[in-house]
Image (cartoon, rainbow, N blue to C red; front, side, top):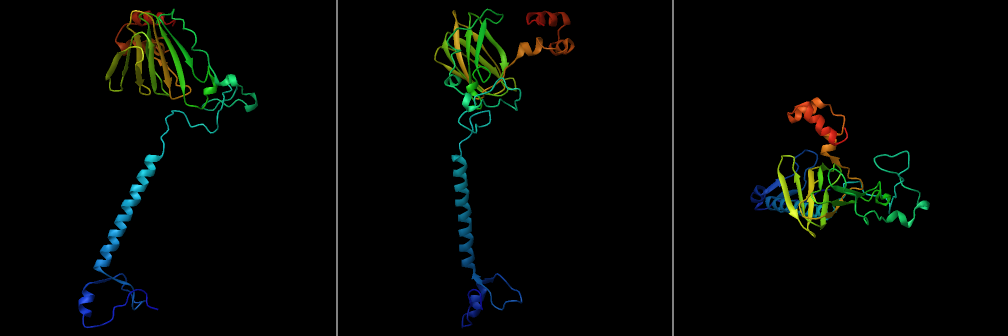
Length: 263
């Protein structure tokens, strides 16, 4: 059996052979498919077009895949009300048995009361995270209510596990953050204005109005965490020598600052 197209000898055989390219020139088959240069060009163009369309399809599919907006793993069930009292936790909290879940697990009234601002920062933070609102477990969200007395500050801090957004409800706040290359961004916000803080960056809110201020903040983690800079440095057991060398001051000044934070 002959495979392919056989070209018969005729008066134009030499001209035809000049335009042909054989895809096999071995001794096993006396006649195998041969293609003209024009046919090879057509096939190459078809393969190139096919690759282009395949790449376009894959790009569209990639764009249609929705990104994850949570810093936490996606939930694997409708809900997983945290069993806060469980003795075992693996990067989170186990679920309360479904038979023990009630409507109260999905509601939180901690934001109904003004926080106590009688402290050194003249501010108060009321968290609604998985520890205080177990229904948030695995849902990748949390909120805070932040109250400010006149001149109050939410001191420089960062959230290692989440980005933050917030809205000013009352008063005027200076909101600012510092990037990893020490660029500082800030703005004074009034009621109704929002802000966003990229994940892990040091930031603060300062009441610059004449009266009280109130803000609500939200996070893309059910437990964003908070590393409060002054407490991390001066209320921990970091050796004083480290702090004196870091800030280029003497031990007496470090001890004075530490005394402000109960250390």
